[in-house]
Image 1 (tube, helix red, strand yellow):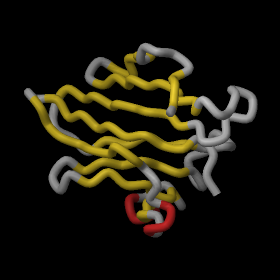
Image 2 (cartoon, one colour):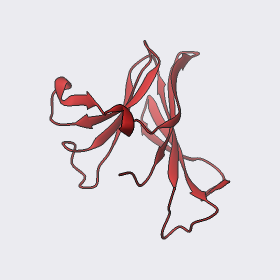
Image 3 (cartoon, one colour):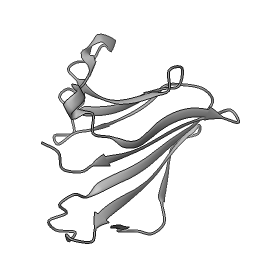
Length: 123
């Protein structure tokens, strides 16, 4: 069983057409300091139809970071490695690194909504 650090979603307006909702999930058999098995659930919401993405970095730099990118045309949400500042540098990670759960992207009432849960600590 997993509880959330905050029972309610945190909401942040990224720009006039895009916001993010997130919450940290902490399993009952760990604590916030160790956080073994902790995950973050996210929803990105964009007014309009578009691909959506968000990246995670230990250094704060784009190159070398791990991105989650959703393409509404094919409904896929996957993890990517960002190896540079051009389109071809975003490469899907191997199947064994595709560890997202509850991942989806869809266009509903003119909004693109991407949802996923990602482990906070991965190999």
